[in-house]
Length: 523
Ligand SMILES: [Zn+2]
Image (cartoon, rainbow, N blue to C red):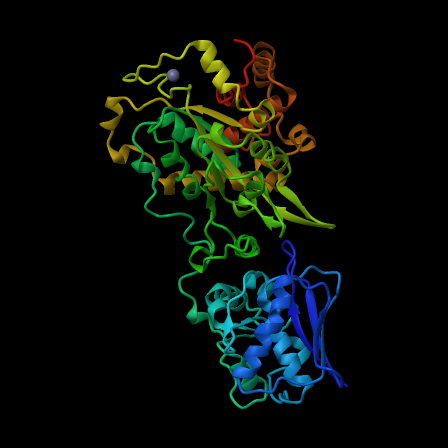
C-alpha cells in the first residue's frame, strides 16, 4: 500500500479552509472511490482525472484507489480538486517523483480542473484561495487562466514588501509534473504581468464628473452630504430628471479604497462565483441589480451560500432604481444589513457571514404617473393616490434612509449656468475626505454607522439645535429611529462645514430635517 498527500483548499463564505487530498493505492479489484463528502462535481472529477492521466501518457493504476478529501465535514464543490487528485495518484503509483519544487511539497497548494486531455482549466474563487494560501506562507500552482485574477495579489504583497511565496501558473498537467520533478521549473507570476491594477487611484469612471450635472443644486448638495457621512439616499423625481446620472457620480465623491479594503472587496467578488475583474481592483463597487432580483440575489444565500448584491456592494454603492418595483420581501431583507453592515447566509448546518457595508441609493417616481411637479407634465393623480403610492415604501425601510430627496425637473434657466460655476467632483471629494477624516478621528467610523450609545456621545446639540429637533419630532411625529438618523445626518452637515466643535447647531439640525420628507406623519 502506498499513500500520497497533496494540499488544496475548499471555500465557504469568505474562508478558504485547507483540504488535504490523500490518495491510497492498494492491491485488489480495480475500484476508484472517493470519501470526504464530495459533491457531484467532485465525483465527476474521477472521470476527468482518469482521462487526463491516460491522455498525458501516464498509466492509470490497476487496483484499488481511495481518494480522501480531509476534513470530511467540509462541503466541497467545483473542479479545483482534479489537479491534486491526479498528482496524488501519480505520486502514490511512483510515476512522479518530487525532486526540486522550490520548497517542500507540504508548503505548496495545487488548484485546477482538468480537461480530458490534461489541460488545466480555470476554477472559480481562485483569488480567495490564493489570498489564504499566501497568508499561510504557501506557494500556489494554479491554472494559467486564473493568473490575471491573482496578479493583483502578487502586486500588493510585493508593494507591501511582504513577498514570501510564489504563484506558478500552469497550462497542463505535464508542465506541473515537470516543475515538481525538476526537469522544467515553471516561471513564477511576476508583478509586471498584471493588466492594469493598482489600488486607490481610480475610484470611479473618470468621465462622470459632478460638474457636468446642470442645475439640481440641492440634489448635488445632498449627494455630497451622503458621501461625507456614508448616508443612504432616496431620490424622488419624474423619469429623466437625472436620478441615476447623479447616483453614478457618488463613487467619484468617495475616498479611494485602501489596499486592505481593495483586497476585501476583491475577495467577496471572487467568492460570489461571478468572478473578479483585475481592472476594477481598488475601485469602489457600484451594483445596480434589476428590480426582478430575488431576495437571495440581493442579500445572498442559495445552495452555495454565495454573497448577494449587498455584499458585492460592500464599501461601495448599491443603486436600486424604481424602488417600488422590487419584490417587497427582497427590500425587507435589506433592513437588518443596513443597520449592522453584515449579513448571515445559511446553508444546511453552516453559516457564512459576509460584510455588507453598502451605501444605498434608491430612486422612485413622485406619483403613480410619474409627472407630479413636472411643469410640462399633466399629472392627474389625486393627493390620496400620491400618498398611497408613497406609502408603498415600508416604514421600517424608510426610517433607515437618511436622506429623502425631491428632485424637480430642471428649469430652463438653470441650463444656462456656466460649467465653471459648478463644483467638480474632485473639489467636492476633497471636502468629503476632510469631513470623513474628522469622523474617523473622533469616533472611528462614519456617522451613518454610529450606534445609539455613540450618538449620545458624539452627536450632542446646542440648546437651539435641541429645541429645533424636539419641535420637529412633535410636529412631524418622527419615530425614535428617525430622530437618531436626523442627529447623525446633522452631525455630518456640521462635519462638512469644518466645525470641530462638539455640538451641532440649529442650522445643521434644520437642514437634516429638511431631508426627511416621507416619514412625516403630520404637517
Ligand atoms: Zn401623477
